[in-house]
Image (cartoon, rainbow, N blue to C red; front, top):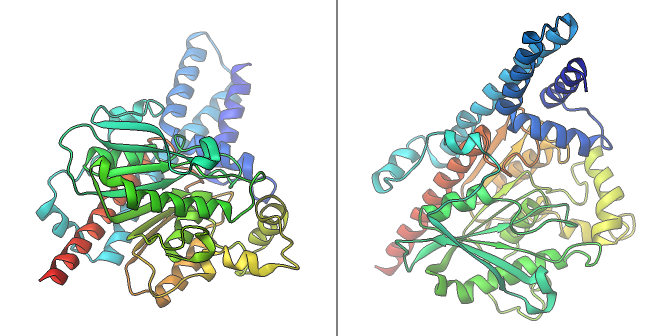
Length: 413
């Protein structure tokens, strides 16, 4: 491929990251191109600069190609600045929900709050690991479903507590693909290194299994944690749940339907409540109740025929029950909702409406970080943006956990 063609590709990817190609059917390619370019903007810029320097030293004088390289450099720099701006938006969301002095309260009791950007980790984003964390793989929590009934436990390698709080990670993948060790890794490694015990589960997928098999398995995972996580150094009395995309949907739905017998067949007596929820770029409107065209296209073209195996024109009640947007209630736990404005797969409007309805009825804190220029799946690997978000989630969960402990201590007096 010639230098000019390489620069055309780089410029097209940068343009799509800055302004994704619109349309329902362009969503997946626009998302993948924009996601990788946005989160790897420093790496793309470095490669483009090296390519341009090599071309110049070889005597290249293609002015059009050089101009494209210059425009791409400007765009990639803008993307990096936008990524760095996530820190401001996350902090503003937490201040709005928890109070302007929330960080002062945290710093009085927590000496390991990490607010800096991990440059070494960002330089090699696909080498995810942490020597301080032990990962125990492939534990069966539901023996009837093979590898779809397995989970992994992430815990501190040393200095283990006996009463660590727990975080459950639910992977995404459109309810049809995905695995427990593919998503949420930066967040789990970060939290486990700071004393939490994290659990990542597989669950049954469509089209082999129709919804609500997915949420039933999530509930089984919660029940397993309640019964067994004590053996891994944790206290199941505080359980936070998180996940992205389909995992974000299941996170929100699990948080809003504690102990719902519809989703607990055969284990109706299990406690499946959670104490906090952090859904990333989730799908909240299965029923297209917002009237959004994209939500309707997703419902009719994907959710109906491939996930629920129902016709929304005849059985809309199934889509309504599966919609976190329509399940909001006053007993919802504290939530930190995170979504990008450039999400090509799930429009940010769903998150806005979900948060608005939740804030109308809930008695608990609801933080909402709407991240400018941010694509779907931005947190899959460490990046400038995802590092700031991970640290924001850390602060939200610690604040929520501290409040829960204080409440429990007051109740015991």
